Every structure is written in C-alpha cells, then in structure tokens.
Image (cartoon, rainbow, N blue to C red; front, side, top):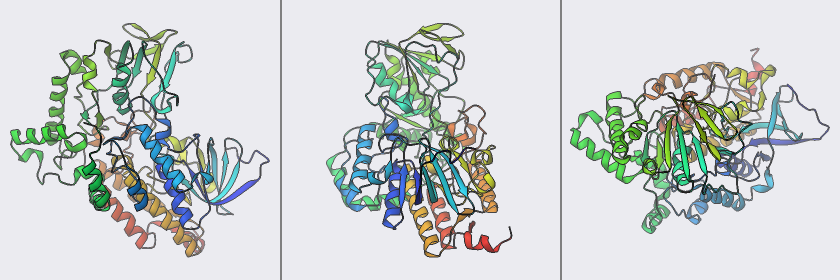
Length: 548
C-alpha cells in the first residue's frame, strides 16, 4: 500500500464523491442542500459518467427517456423536453450537462482526476484519499458513485500491440467520433453495445466481420419522436407514473399491468397474441407480459421460442439465423437487448457472422486477426466486449478499511455488502447501487435516486445525533448475502453465464451480483432499516461502548 507520498497539503471535506454521472451529480446536490461540504472526483473531462464515455455509434438508453430521468426537482422535470422514446447518448449527455449547470455543480467537481487510494484512518475517523495526481483529501464520508458498467474489459488477445490498424472499445469511444466509410471492420462481441453499434457501422463500412461467442436475445425498440400528447401527459402526471414504476419489480412502467396468471395458463394462440402485441409495441413489454417468465422454465421457453422464431423470420440465410438464435440459456437471464434493425443487418451483403465459440480469435496480426480456420484482414477492430460489472471500478481503487483490510481482498470470493450500500469493516464508505442492490436489474435512474436519498438521510442523522461513524455489521452483511443468493436461485438467472454472474471476466467468482427481489421489497427493507435506527448497522456511539 502506498499513501501520502507527496508534499501537497491536505484538503478536508465532509464527503468525497467518486464519479460525476447520474449518481454523483445528485449526491452532490443533496449533500449541498443539507449543508455538507462535498466534492466530486471524476476521471473524465466532463460530467456524464457512462454517458460521457460510451459514445459508440448507436449508443442509447434501453429505458424510455421519460422514465430515465431525475424526479427530485419538479422544475427540472418540467423544463426538460426529451425528443425520442429512447434517448441517444448525445441527448442524455446534454441532459446531464444541463443538470450540472442548472444546479451549479461544476464548482465542486474536480475533472481529469482518478482516485488511486482511499484508506480509513481509525483514530481520526476519516477517509484519507489520494488522487493519481497526488492531491490529498480527508473526508468523513467516502461515497462511491463509480457506476455499475464503467470498468471496460478488453480481452487479453495475443498481438494487441502489433495490429497496425485502429482499435476501439465501445466503452471508451473517441469523442470526435469515428468514420468507418470504406473500411473493413471487425466487431468482437454481440452484447448490448455490439447490438446497438453493428447496424450503424455496417451502414458505413465496406465489410463488417462480426465475431459472436454467445448469441443474444434482442427485441425491437421501435424508437421514434415522442408525441406531443405523450409529453403533455407526462408533464401533468409524471409523479403519478414514477410512483407506479416504483411499485413494479424492475421499476419500469411497462411492468405495471402484467397478466395475473402464468404464461402456461392461457391458450397458445392467446399467448402468441400477447407476445406479438409486446413485440410490436417495442421495448421490454413482451418480456413483462407474464409474471412467471423469469422464474418458470416452461413459461420462459414460450417467450424464448417466440423470439427465436422472430429471428428466423427476419434473417434470410437459415444458417446465419440459427447462429444468431440463443438456445442454451433462458431469455432475459442475460441482459435483454433492445435494438434498431440488428437482425436485419445480417441480410446485408457486407456483413459476415463468425462463430467465435467454434473458431475463437487466436491472435491479432499486423493486418487483422486470426482464428483457427483463417485470417481476416481489417482496417479497424471494435471491442464490444463489455465491462467488469458492478465490482470492477471499485476493485480498481486501493480501498482499505479497518486494520488495513483491502476491499478487493474482502471481496475475493464475491462482493459482500449490506443492502448494496455498505460493507462490514469499512466505516462511512457508501456504494451507490452497489452489488447486492437492484441496480442493473432496475431502472437505474430510479434506483440511484433512492440510494442517494437514503445515504443523504443517513449522514444527516449521524450529524444531528453526534455520531462519527456507521458501518454494516458482519451479521447483517451475512444475512443479506444469503438472502440475495437465495432469492437469485428462486429465479432462472443463475442458469446463464452472464455478467450478472461475473462470467464474462476470467477468474471472477461466479456469484449473482445484483438483488433480484424487486424494487418495492428492497425499498421497503431500506426504509424499515432506517426507521429502526439503522438496524443492522453499527453506529459509532454503540461501537465505542462495545469491547468488540
């Protein structure tokens, strides 16, 4: 461990916040309202978090814009007008810049700064933090708003350094954009960013080679401008709609009217009609049609086969269609993608699909890449290979709690938290939408607001009662971890080798990372914990009286 290696003076804050995306911006605003001194440390040169870095072609949110928004300010809600049903990255980034300017947040944000080390000083009850530039700060609270999908993963291919063309990762796209006109392009990966970018790249490039290891289920977005009457309805009824969304398992309005019965309890023709209606509506509606799709394999099979048949009907080449058709995991247990013309792209003459499971990429060469069967000469390679989800960004910082324990070591067998908010042995360290919370299995904007408000209320409670520290108790952490795992195994999610399970990162423990118990149950638990004097947490006053 290295710390305090420079001669720079140390600033003092009530709270240091890491990350200036949706979570960090709102956290700063709430703490300011409560009279705390706070500062954000952001690796990028601007606000936006995920939406600052992910500028790849076709990047857009898979939650509808009107729902993927802050609701803490009625004025903000009413003055911002979204243009599309599913906002593209540039529009979301404009929104977050508008928020930063409207609430004058930039004066408390330090850009182009990574946090290298954060160590808890037990005697002073402060976090001692050092940036990659040598700046130092002491903060009572350290709040990680680092995002669930922010640590980009580039496969460790042989020959990465010798390829003479251009290499791009969808999570770190050049801000000036990339023009692939006339180029031969290899795209490695067919997760969400691949599914969004491949149709756009194929419209520019002379040839696109798509290397697919695992085919993904994807449903159409049917994106387009938001009708004026819909905008007006949201202007008038937005709070009502947010309350309805909060009552659904994933925090999405589309789940507000599921059938009251199993997919197996209706006739096949009626089931097909319901699925078709959802497919034509676009978005997650189809998968939300019946309540047991993610818990009953037979019900899930009916939805999966519907989508498989759609793929077969769209892709003209039967062999390519079968390669694109997922068969070895239940639908929605890997991230369900929402696309615009993805499967249709494989009808283009300039797009070739390669089965990277049967013939993996063995190495990059000076002029392209090589599989067991052949070499592909390309001008550019796009890595749509995803992220070290939920824990990657936190493990990238040297975080040490009581007695010098490293968070990364504590989490060596999988992350351990209480409510996804705190970890035992790490006082005053909060993780917004951390592992063990609904996070990526919910509308992130909704879950972020809930976490920020809970954390803000918590630190205000500590201040008002003269309490120096709070941390999860080991017992509560163990109980919550068991509950998260038991709940996950009541569903079909563990059957897929997904990034929800850490399966995309070699050597990462195979544990279910988010909480699948649903937004309402989780929110109720958090509220009850706070109402009972932060039950399951150890408060400083009590710790001082306990020999433990």
